[in-house]
Image (cartoon, rainbow, N blue to C red; front, side, top):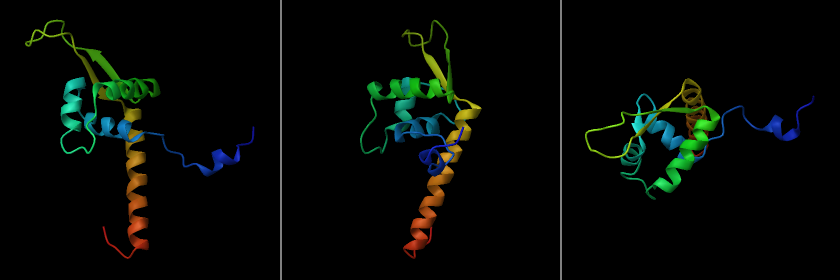
Length: 118
């Protein structure tokens, strides 16, 4: 079946929202639960991310196969609820790398066009 014009024009990289990209970046190489993710994301962030945005992003990323999760111990030292720990999958790391490589190439083209050096 022939590709549509739209498919021909779009680069072959995963589609990630800015929040999805931030979450994958924070999780890369480690396993964190929700509050830890927010604690890593929010310092210096112009608009702090809240749980109401984080968990839908984690669900999207899980459906795409970019993150996986596991339940923590039933009883933890804080006495709080059982935690869900998230980590980036190989597919997620590949997608993040593709998007970040694209952004770097885009920035280099933009600065070269403006006579700037990165």
